[in-house]
Image (cartoon, rainbow, N blue to C red; front, top):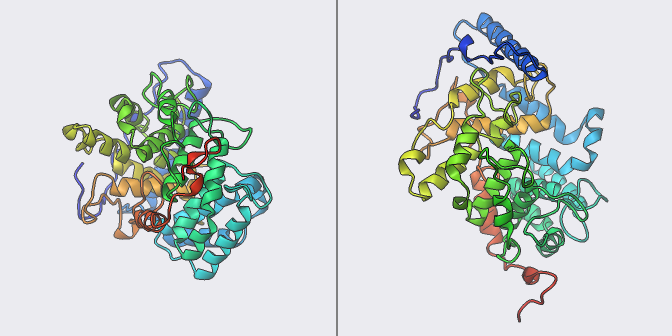
Length: 418
């Protein structure tokens, strides 16, 4: 599908033949799938009744107000995320940058101060002040600080101690645990590679054998699992692939098998993506799955698969935008998993990230974008590896590459050569 200069104005046909067929065998999964399809039919029917010339609209102002309020006040419902507070900073700040809403300097400074309190004395960031360092909030904190992109934000990151923390969670087989004494899965390898590359503390020794460990997570389906031997999953597949892109080893994946797996995760009727085979559509996979495709596009091109990489059929960009704009927006602001679900900052971030990918995928020229609806629906591009805006990635790399790699680059078990 070629990029166009004018916005797309019409709906695709929501054809009954695209619905799930249970072949007369009813299961719990098939019942739930039909419920989701019915709810989407109702949403689309109501929307068409209310709009004679349906142009799905991104509720920019409502989303902005929802996000702005979240930076200062959270309801009691967020108490369960007390160990994920840097994630809340990242989800909100990234959503704002996609909407191209400036972050007031006073709020940016307050976020920097809060994240500095989340930084562990031994390195890395915790889910909240006084908690133990963990790779997931470390990734979220570093991304949030790079989105802010000020000297104050960069100075929060103690790079030497961050490298100490990465060494402390590195395992002999090349994998990483999420925290000292914690679980291993492919998310941890991605979080480690992401923060190390953005802050210029990445070293070959630090990621020795990591490539082979990630490759062992690619299974017979073509996608990647959390650990070797399990079912392929959209979030883990993104993490493993993006980590290999950072390490320059993505060509070692079975790229064609991975492509076959991910393109089959876009739902025929709904237009959004599922995370695993035989699962329901979920708005967050708008990024975890669609975000894989720019990485595959680039990898296939590097491998000489120019005809394959230039194809625009890797996913139906218009259908994904329709799903997000029609089925995932709360009228009061915020985005959600699917109709009948509640809004939250996680789904707001990843629905908007997926919408951005769908608008900009396959087009290096900003005048050739695939925008469904009015021009005001356009979001800023997002970097498919780090999921922050490309200019913020460039500024962070420029800043941290002016600084030397810390002296503890050789690791805790070997003295640094003098």
